[in-house]
Image (cartoon, rainbow, N blue to C red; front, side, top):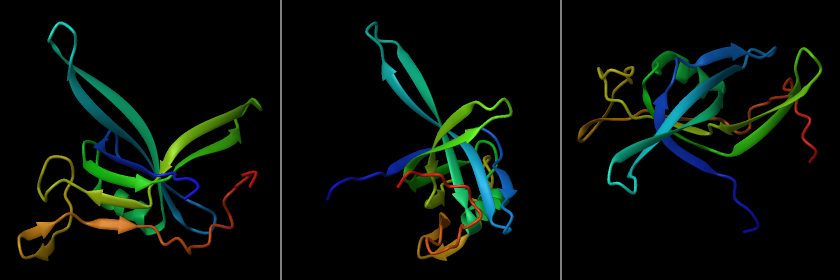
Length: 148
């Protein structure tokens, strides 16, 4: 194996997903997800460190995010880290690094505070709903100036 680009995070949404549509009517959801870790400092006091992650979901996954995820929802995201480049209104080149959500699993149970997931019956009652992007979907209308 020559390389691997895969992020896996479990965190909570900082705000409701921001969903927009491309010219070909493909849904794109932008989300901000917080992950936290707790640790003891040298004096023995508990500290908490929070990292914020930009996440983008496409197609049906984006629509599911819009329908079921809300600020505070706990979610598992898996996918590659990618960096996009664009020009702002002043002509400055800007960059954004984000996780492209190829898999999204809602971790909140139905009726919990962070949004509710539809129930999928199984032997134990219900399980989290999972969604993934169809990788064969056509994204020809996306500006993609990647050098490779």
